[in-house]
Length: 559
Image (cartoon, rainbow, N blue to C red; front, side, top):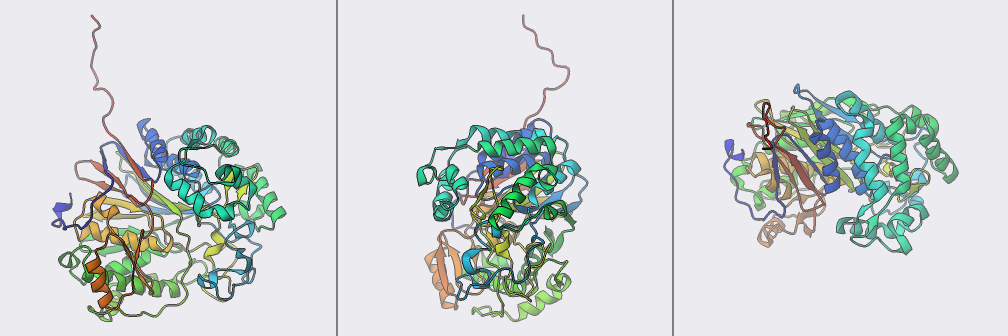
């Protein structure tokens, strides 16, 4: 399909995974068991929404370091009628929290978002009001076709019976082991005998299986109005956390309309505030539209230079203007306007790196998950979900068997700032469940985890597809770059010669293993084919459904 609008670019890298091609449905997530759960729903006649919710619940079991029912997220849904909507299930600040609840730690390595005692990062005082469970259940009721009990069966099965530890999960446990050892319930599962689970060892979460079974019977009310919420609130009260019963009963999801960017004849749709991603992807694409990125070539020093400059511009504006629109006026129209892009573009030096004015930026957790699902009816879901940092607050709620978020780390602990704490305030995020259309027809849906590196990486994938004509597998695996004004991070696959040219242009180049996490995507062809792709940076797995039922009127003879 890429050749329909652009000659394919020459690439300097080799893909490490293979895509999947299907006609009746596709699910791509960052764990094979989760993708299988979604594909099972499609195989039994469910739609993309059924598949997405089944996948998300299973991810809470098999990717517990990234996502959970005590978390939050953003879902981009395209229905068969062509309408787009975002379901905002982001976490909120508990009502007991005030602007000065935490004390910013002097000389903190991650700016003012670090606090004395790491209270907003680790432990019960780091936990924000969860939104994910309510959002998933509501979304299934509104747009799905299957029962909650049916879509949750794979998750319950894997929690009760266990699953094998992957090398990726082992590495994540090892990275967080020091903090996790301080909490006996979480250590009992992931650090038996005090050491991280070894690759191949089974992860059994019997208590969480019971929690999931209760939710399957009673829905989100079990947490927001019922006994599961009592368990959470009781734990918070006993351990100094902030969540109270009123926080749960008063929590609401929000349906929002997408941010639109028009780029070289394409329509790109992304999440609106409080997500910063849709606004700033639109902003960056508008600026880049003034350059012939295709002619400059993928991975060239010239292309990376322009990417770096627009990233610095976007982060400067993000620091000044992003936030919950119920609390902060976000200048969406100006930031996404072609006139503003032209204004910013005129200031870019094509041969020299510049410093762009910026204030304090968020220290977003890089440990998130993303999944994408599509059915043959025209429904598509791209959703990014998280408990923020790796293993969230590093605590497991006894009686629930689930890990809590540490979303409070995304707020500025200082009073009087755009991202300061306020009861009920939603987090600002870089989550980027994106979709791209050509002549009104959906062509791509994609997303990834990775904190504040998410939206720059999603933007680069769109550039790979639109300007460089890459296949969807190439686009998700291609080497990435990132900067917010300091070092220019480039993945190690960027050639030494390109790095040297960038350094000569004034960039402080730093080679890194990865920029952001495991991207996954689905490409849609005019003939009904779907191609699912996942990259090497996580356990991403595409699973497609093809074939179909037997043709009517067939008779089989046994003689």
